[in-house]
Length: 323
Image 1 (cartoon, rainbow, N blue to C red):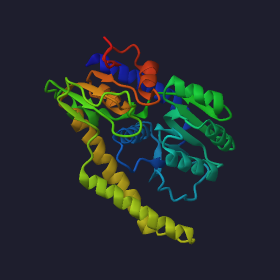
Image 2: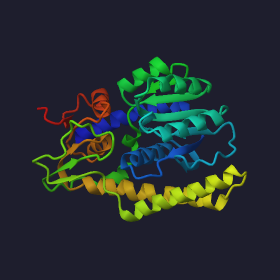
Image 3: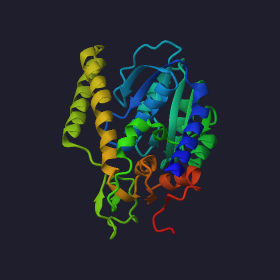
Image 4: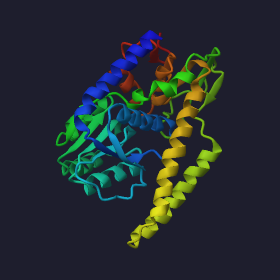
């Protein structure tokens, strides 16, 4: 539909305008989501499609907390994924990010658009001081609320505002999942700590209530990758590297997790004519698939902040229960 394509194009142009001056010819992804959050995988796919469309050479793509800390030429830009894990809510991912920043002071580092949440104020100063030691660190927020947090607390780094990278997912992947509605309503209900106690757990109009679907074989693969990571870390702690294991982890994460779950997310939303979601990326993916969507906010206002920043003038996206 024309209005959807117009909005998608507008948001992609903002991403390109902000990001293009920052990335060199060679780019490395340091913390790809080798886990089962389909929203984060859509960000990863969008980042890859952006790099391909804009002529950047991807010299490596490693999983979050799987990074082997290789020697890098100074002209390689380190790209860190966007999402909703900047702060203390999902602390292991933030700690991993901080270690990468500390260990590569001579490489430009760009963090793709994030939502930011700190429940422990002291950690803001801790993280800000560590990040300020890197003179070429570029931080993107994906909503105005998060941008304000960055400007107030991380101003010693370079701070930007841009939409979520999932808007850069190639239309060739999305096309087969458009225009297959069956008149049904989906209530996508998250089942983690970001679901607020006040959120409904059922909707009378919903034909299906479910979180993102993840095939059991993919869950097994992720568990096996985590076991392999523990083995690799044990050897590295003794000054040894098991390069075949590291290569196998990287291959499986890149080849199977992203391909399987991005398509699974598209396939899951395909038959629904109306979607109500408690997650951000079903809202974004609905828009990419040309579907109207209603949202129920998470614990810290991430979804409404994003919608109010980028989609306030777009009628197919609205808060649930609002006419």
